[in-house]
Image (cartoon, rainbow, N blue to C red; front, side, top):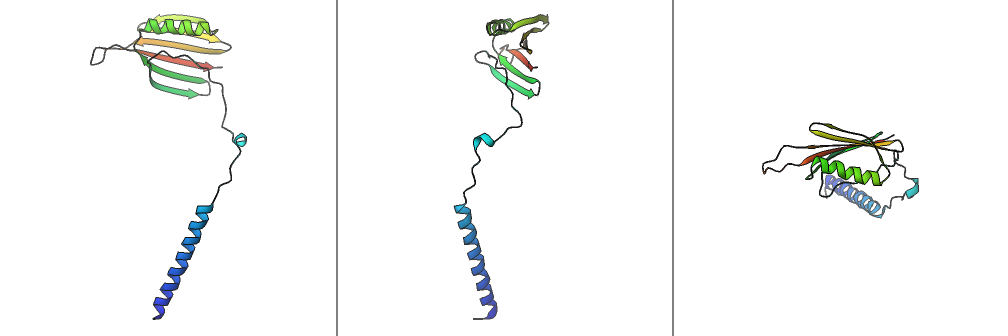
Length: 143
């Protein structure tokens, strides 16, 4: 057997052994489990829960260090949405700070324990089927 064949055979055998050893170690590896209580998040916050009307469609949401904003679409009228939030939040202990109309928007600001919720609703122009939905912006501030 020529010398270069022997050399190639030895190199191939060594590579097969290294690959087998690597595969075996990878297969048998068990990572060290971290206890749940030692895992910490960046920060924690208590987010004010807010009721949402039935059959809403979430269009967007945003959260920052001061609170969050939610934008939804509903089939109710702007006034029905304002009434919904007035009844829901007043029953949860919130107080009305102000109400206002600035066409085409209806606005109500609620406050409770240094927190505030502003509900703005407006009727949108009809879609291709003539349906007119209401867009609702909910701004929650966690002071």
